[in-house]
Image 1: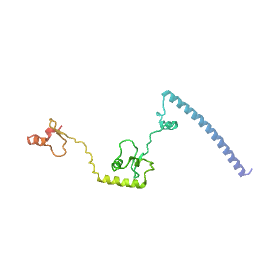
Image 2 (image 1 turned 180 degrees about the horizontal axis):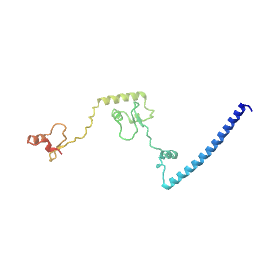
Image 3 (image 1 turned 45 degrees about the horizontal axis):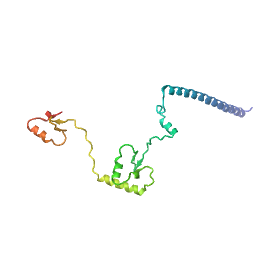
Image 4 (image 1 turned 90 degrees about the vertical axis):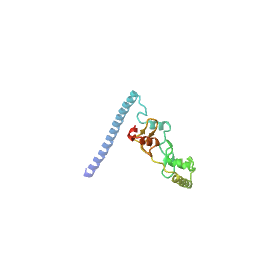
Length: 179
């Protein structure tokens, strides 16, 4: 036998060995999987676990045909603003509805809305937003409250009320009213 034939036979032999070893590995893996599955079944039965306990509730609901809650956007204005339909309506949607738009105009996948109508609605919403007065930012609650014990109180913000001015004029100090 020449050198090429010896290498060819060795290569063929190695390929056969690889195939044989792969079959053995697959058989061993299948038996190990069976053992693991059997242990899992015992644990599930022992503890009374459900698909929800295992984090498989969405998988099992798909298998049974039950619908799960959608997390994708249900409403969109085409300008990047989206709303899932859960919770309070976002400002962009409230303003558009106040401007005369319909909620159906914003439904995701709605084929009734034309691009022209969408552009017009966006312009109207922008105009109404520009006309609306800006909301004041909420202030942190006052750390000090001044009270006279007769139901009058002052947070220390804004001008002093008449009752406090009169009390200070009569000789009391501001510290006398700290609560």
